[in-house]
Length: 281
Image (cartoon, rainbow, N blue to C red; front, side):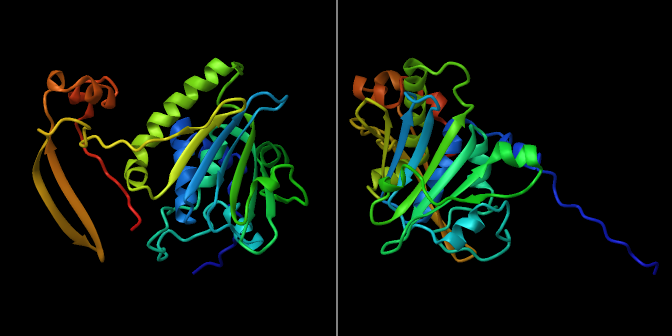
């Protein structure tokens, strides 16, 4: 065999933009970040919008386990975990890209502050514009961060600024529209967790009261009792149990106004389909 001569195939830093344009909507980007909160055993998750500063920002704050500086450094690395490695039962991640790709889809800079109970907070910064311009895959440890005191005894904050999601329309009307859409989306995605009271999610804009997201169950109408369960079974796959249920929903016009409102005013045909829930027991 001829002698082989190696050469570097390290990805270009433009990869960070590829990740940020991998099909995220704003709602799904926030949901990806909430996955991390749930995996960290958070019970309370707050999403906060502030447009009243010269540099508007959004942060996601939880009261989960928090991370050491070593774990924060790992979290900054794209693909730091092998996808074939065994994960904990309560780990909702797989590819080790969610934090970077989700935030890159709507902002140019993030600061992550995290605190383990009984320890001091650790803070790192991922400046996506710096990565692109410097062509260096590097992050920064910060000594101070003005919102670090928002962390209580433990938890994590993902602070996002230099926002791109709102474009040039930085006004309250646009923000409230985003919040309404986000509330509905999160009520669907995390409906099972919210309905079991496993977590609480609040959304707040500066100067307004927080909105607490209510869980939504496409089959659990409030007043109607005629929804039929036509299949209810469970299967075991690789040591995990998968529950499968099928329903026949009633005619929309036969629903009470309260149930019609619960179904978001849409015909029930629009709610048909497969609903797949990942749950942590």
